[in-house]
Image (cartoon, rainbow, N blue to C red; front, side, top):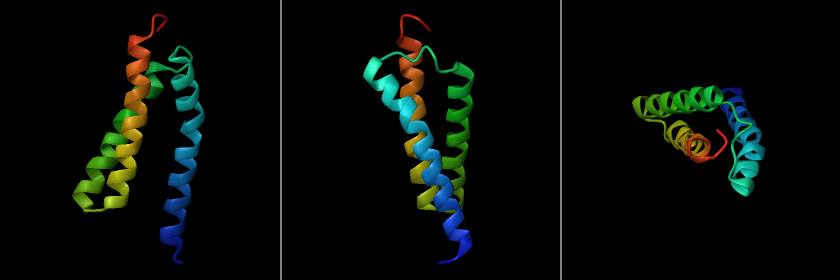
Length: 86
């Protein structure tokens, strides 16, 4: 397999794995107090850019993965904004 394919796949898998503990914790407690609003917003915007890039390049893989991350960070933002202790 080509290294140009393997490296992005590994990077995307590691990125997905890295956010799972935070998503799980917030989902179980419905509390995003410990998550930085700046981190959530920057990550959300970053992944919106990735989705846009995937659309422009007509690359479903980039677009779909970016959309999944947009969903993750949108969930975190929703919880952060609706939590009693922001």
